[in-house]
Length: 109
Image (tube, rainbow, N blue to C red; front, side, top):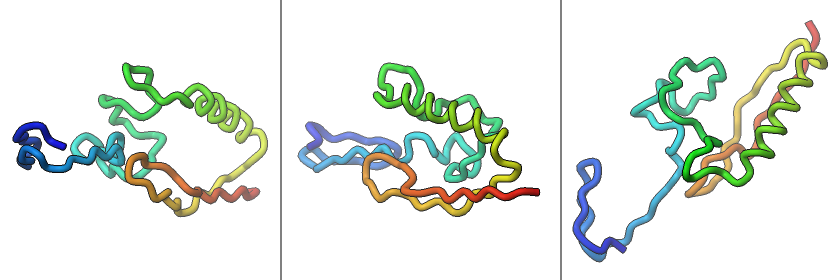
């Protein structure tokens, strides 16, 4: 509940109003990223932080996630000639944005 009248980004919330904080747009923030909802590993816009950063608030699973990503990205080039990435299915969650699935198909040249 808002303890006082607050204006944030041109929206005023009155004292006593319910408030809900959503993290879903923490990283794909349209104000800082072009095509914010598109995953682009070659993205040049690196001025703003991505998830899994080591700051005051950091994901507890970031170490494991980095190890898993490193193992996958190290092993893939020797095992796959071409990878085709399909359409992602987003997990329905009102606080954390994440993938339910991301189909990837390997094929030979």
